[in-house]
Image 1 (tube, rainbow, N blue to C red):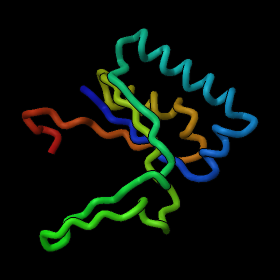
Image 2: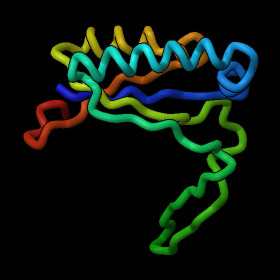
Image 3: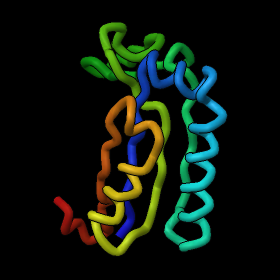
Image 4: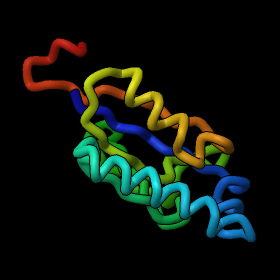
Length: 120
């Protein structure tokens, strides 16, 4: 089954990756990515740009409303994602636990819905 690992960020986590410990944290990310590539579990993933580059789109009463960024009061924001294909949800959670960002912010592990929709 495929799982999406949603990686959240905040100011502290971004600073950790871009600060003095950033090189060591990125080495951990690279090690996990290498393992997942070699095991065939990696489907894909990307980091997302800073939320200041975000546009939020809503349709209210049939009228599109496009605004800058996510909600200002948000303490965390989606910082990236990792898609894996694993035998069990426990394996997907194990990967999330080992992702360095989990020390700073939560990672959400969600099964990707199959065409038949049994995950509903």
